[in-house]
Image (tube, rainbow, N blue to C red; front, top):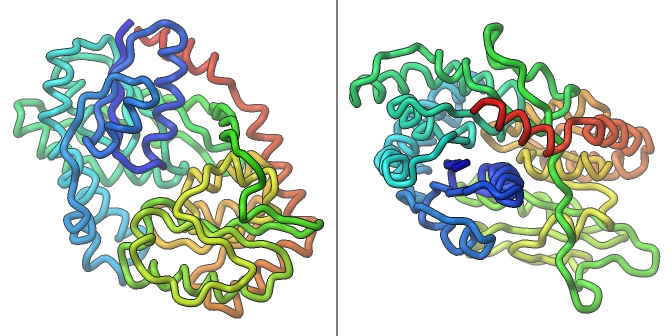
Length: 384
């Protein structure tokens, strides 16, 4: 069978999609991925056929978020979903996805849940489609609700009837989020998503200990604000706040910056902190005693699957929802508008109280009991 995947470029979008693409390819199916040209090298290295789509300039993404800073979470989601994800990303990507369908002729289309060009193109071509939920349950519902009007405008432009979000609601979905993060259905009439535990990545081979590795019984704190942060003054300030908050920690601290922040000066680096642009999570989690993060889904799910408690300082998108879910599960603390003293205290509190590690271990056990990738692939194949 032939499967066409469609995704945005960020790791939080691409990584979940690639897990399914690899599983299908390993089982002998033909797989092609439609994603921005900027991830071509990564996809080729991973052995996937890639049909490149347009790259959305960072200045256009920043502009799409402009003016939303003082909006409520719900109002901000409503504006950003239609403005950035539908009218900016997906409208630009639609021609390349349409061409991919015509030339590659897939039997099924599997999309990143924030990438809507594949949804429209699949409906136009009469090809079944499913989605990989890359966001928490509440944000997935928001995307289903707040994308409808903008999607209908594009649908009507290419000759499809407006469906008021019916196509999104009818999709079968797959999510890596456990039940403790909430109801996964995006609407009462939507199919119940399949909850799937993600395959464990093997730690990359390394010669000798990493320079950030803890020694002599010291503990390690892992600080990461993902691969996409660092485009605004507020985000850049969070790095400085975190550095000052961990400066007196007696153990070791690893701070990863991501590519955007790597070009901005961080200021003085405390002696106990090692700064890297990127380190694979699978390499860090075995040593980490706590994770300080913005609450990106990939980091949150990875840490919880490893039973590591978190301190979450959300910035945007689904991160506030993730922060509240982590705290509600007893697996960490949510720190909105954190400053140096409050963040320092939160980190110390999480490290000193076993209840947070127990809460994280409980979520880890819940995630381990979710369906494996074999079940997910069998379910996908039955849709054909």
